[in-house]
Each structure stands twice: as C-alpha cells, then as structure tokens.
Length: 141
Image (cartoon, rainbow, N blue to C red; front, side):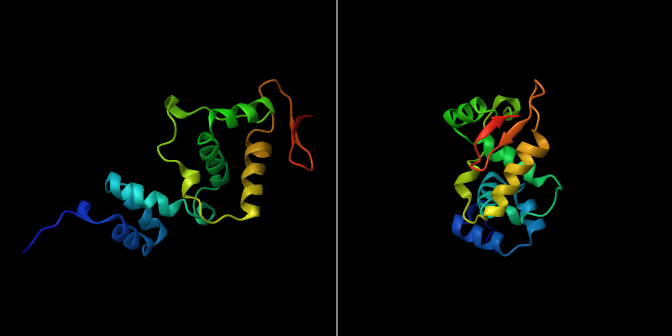
C-alpha cells in the first residue's frame, strides 16, 4: 500500500474537494494545514455574503475589508470622519481578502456600510455623529 501525504494534493484538486463540501465542513478545512487554509479561505471569501453564522457578520466583514485598505485609503476615510478599526496586535490581516471577492451584490455593500457606520460606529469619540449624504459623502452631524 502506498501512503500519500494529504499535503501533496495540488491546489486545483484541493479546491475541487473543498468546493463540494458543506459550508460547516469548509470551516474545518481551515484547521488542517496552511495549504488547506489558503485554498479554503479563497473559496469562502469569493462570496462572503453567503456565509451563515454570526448575527454581526456584516460588521465583522466590514472591519476585515477595512483592515485590508492601503494607508492612503485609511487616511482618506479617517480624514472624512469614518472610523478605521485598529489592526489586532498591530499586524495586517493574514490574507488579502478583497482579492478573493468574485461575487458581490449592491445590497451587500449597502449593508456593510450601514452596519459599520450607523450601527457600530455612528458616533465618534468626541460624541459627533456621522452623516452620509445622497452621494455617500461623509460629513459630521
């Protein structure tokens, strides 16, 4: 009998295996090895709005995407009153999650913005509210 390490599977074969799993099983694949994690994350983040689970998933997703912004993008948002989350342990995210995004719905983006700006971060540290106008320009209330 020939034994083969599970880590010797090509990325293409591994992704085909993971694609055919239920979502809960896909989360288990994140813990198998770094290679499995990398391939599974890319599949899960192709269409993150389909991920079931946490009731605050939109806030978590918004925070994760914001942590992937460049310094210039973060500075622009911060200068316009949009609070940017600090990176945990001062490290950037492990993956470039926006890179994996393949399917997006406008309603999903609206919900991300709403959850982050209005529900989670509608008041800055000085007690000032944040307002978006019809063109989604940020301003103080």
